[in-house]
Each structure stands twice: as C-alpha cells, then as structure tokens.
Image (tube, rainbow over all chains, first blue to last red; front, side, top):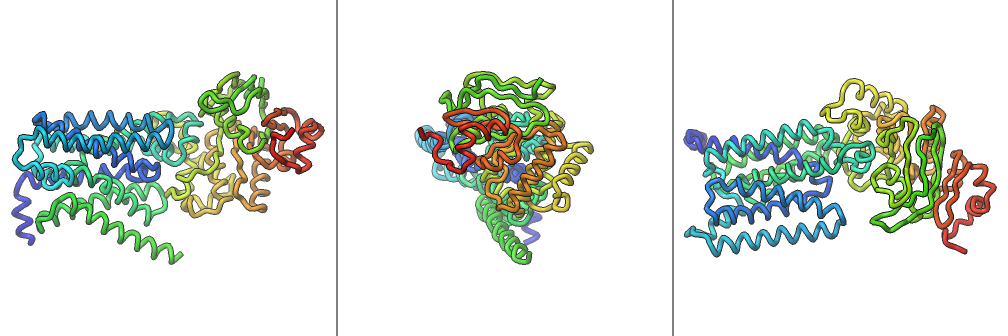
Length: 280
Length: 238
C-alpha cells in the first residue's frame, strides 16, 4: 500500500493535487463558522450552482483558463445576492433559489447543446462531483489556486476581529461605527473565491460540505471563537489530506471521499462533545 | 450644550412613520427612560439614535464633543448569539472595535480596558467561559461590559431586564444606577413603567401622546398618573 502511494507521489500532478487540496481545505474552513452562524450557508450553496453555470459557459467557449470566467461571475453574483438579501429575508431567499436553480439548468442546457465532448455525462458529473479534476489542473491553475488560498487566509487573519464583531452582533458593530456592510461584502467576495477554489477539489454540489462540516465539528468541541476557527482549519486540512490519499489508494472519487471523511469526523466530534458535555 | 438634542423627530421604517413629534434632549449625567407600549416605536427610536436607521423627519444633533459612534449600546439578544461559540473575553474585547479603526488587532491598552470593564461588571472570573453557557443575567453583564468598552459617556440600553427573573432584574437595575452615579449618561428603553419611574430622572413616553419631562412632572401629569396606577391598557384607548 505504501509502495503504491510512493509511486503515485512520484508524479508531479499528484503532488500538485495534494498541495492544492490542502490549501483549498484550509481556506474553505475558515469562514465556515461565520457562514453557519450568520445563516449564510444557503448563499454558499446558491453560489456553487452559479459557479457550475459559469463553468458550463467556460467549457462551451472552450476557454483554456476557465477560472478567469468563473471567478468574476461568481463574485458578481455573491455581491448581488447579498444586496437583495438585505432588504427582506423572503425576497433574498427566493432570489437565491432563483439564481442558483436557473444557473444549474442553463449550465446543463448549454453543455448539452454546444458541447463538443464525446462524454457529456462524464463532464457534467465531474463538474458536479469533482471526480478527478484536481489531478488534471494545469500549472497555471495550480498557481492561481495557491495564490487565491493565500489571499483568503491573509484577508481572514487581517480582518479576524472585524469578522468576529460583525458575525456576533451586526447592530452593535454598526452602532459603534464599524462599517458592517463593507465587511459583509468582503465576506461575500471571499465566499465566492472559496467556492470557485473548492469546485476544483470536490465539485460544485459538494462545496457546502467542505465549508460547513469542519466548522460544525469544531463547534461541538470548543467554546471560544479562536479555538473553533483554528480547530476547524486543522480538521479540514487533515480530512482533505486523508481523503485524497484514501481516494488514490482505493480509486474512489476524490470529492466525495473527502466529504465522507468530513462527515465521519463530524460524528466523532459530536460524540466527544456529548461525552464532554455530560461530564460537566 | 447637551449631548443629544432631538428636534421634531419622526422615526420609522421605509418612510412609514411609527413615532413622531419627538422633542427631547439628553445632558451629561442624565438617566432618561423611554417608555411606551409594544409597537409604539421605542426600538425604532433607539435604532435611529444609534444611526442604524435614518430619521424620516426632524433632526438629531450631537453636541458637547459627543461623536455619533461614542455611544455604548446594549442590544436585545439575537438568535445568532444563543449558540455562538465565543468566550466572554472575546465578546467584551469586541466592544473596542471602534477604537481600532483599521488596525487589525487589539493592543494592550484595549485589552486592559476590556479587563477593567469585566472587573467592573464582576465577570472577570468567567473571562474564559463560553457565552452561551452563562445565565441570562450574566450574559447581560457581558454585553454591558462590551458596551462600556465602546463608551465613557453614554449608554443606550434596550430592555436590559427582558427575560430576567426578579432578583436578577433588581441587580441589573442597581448596576445601571451605579454606572449612572459614576457619571455615565443612561438612556434606557423599558416597558416597565414602574421601574422607570423609580430610577430615571427624565421620562420620555411615546405612543399616541408624547410626554417628555422630569420624573416629577411625569408623576403629576394625567398620563403618568394613568400609567403608573397600573391600569396599563392599550395606548390607544380614548
């Protein structure tokens, strides 16, 4: 088994996949707590469908660097969704459902009508569930993933205190003069970037899992924001790494394996949290 | 010059006016209580004072070196906070966010300020405890300590005793009174008119009729006598 692993690791693309996978897992876990608590998780889900639609357009246009199209479209939609969400709750919900389902349908339609690929179902499936796309990243995409992950982590660290303040109590933050709207916008843009990144790893349907599970697991075990954030980052990296290795050894799809490991970790964390809670 | 002067203010959401003809002023060291029925616009008025809502008409003038963001605010609890994984220390420290401006992290001074305020509120021993595990009264103390980090001058309290049991309620009122004696101006929203009349020195009663004046005047006015006698019906009876 170790030998098989060693043979795999000899290939540059496998090493790339692991590095990118770990970085994506790290950055996607950071905002998880904020998303869960601000009830933004549905925005993440909606945006992942938008990213799928954008991906379809990019493949129809035969772009070599699909990310150059997907990233701006997803960011614009994130900003738009946040805008509509501010007026009234229900309108915002409906807008998200509308945009995400619409993007999904149009994406599939476009791929069906214009795709030159002989294996259409396979293409769609790999966009939705990730499959092996992480192993086929070009060098350019690998660099872009790395740079974006580093930016996401840096933005999060720099604005950590503000993000905490805006998440915990938006009205208080506004009342003392923190520009909560600007930070909400920042959060939305970062989510969009994370989703586009994570799409390479787990596919657009499974992204929410990558964002939310580490945060939920950490919230079972820890009681302050800093430890929850750090633990969810570590957990996410461990899950992604072991998920990638397992999928290589057993030949299972990368995305769903990682998510399965995340779910498993969540169950363990819930159990530990339960035991700790009872002990008190 | 007073801290806050309100002239002919109309407050509400989306251009529909909820409360109007509001005229009052708040001077340093005062204890103003805003009372009124549910839906009379108390919370809307508070949000307008805090700058979270734009006034529909009239003016709010800040004077005496008080900046609009120098008001400490004790909001009502939100659902988000009920299961928020944060320690007491983290929450109190977030009251210093306005002092930071664009600086990303809190400095020693701000950490010391947070510690002082936790001590003041008697919650220093639970600094590392999780907020969601505290009792309602303890949570209010945490939020009060946070508000004190944001201001040295004015505190706005939105129903500070909502959901607290009688003993804790009395503690909370005493705590607020002692802050007022230390020189902090208090503006408190309450639907508990009896308590308002006991602690405040000025009363603003909003509803169909608006009353503003000292506690003494309120007790002697028809409106005050009516509400203080405990016959609190709808505000709209005629």
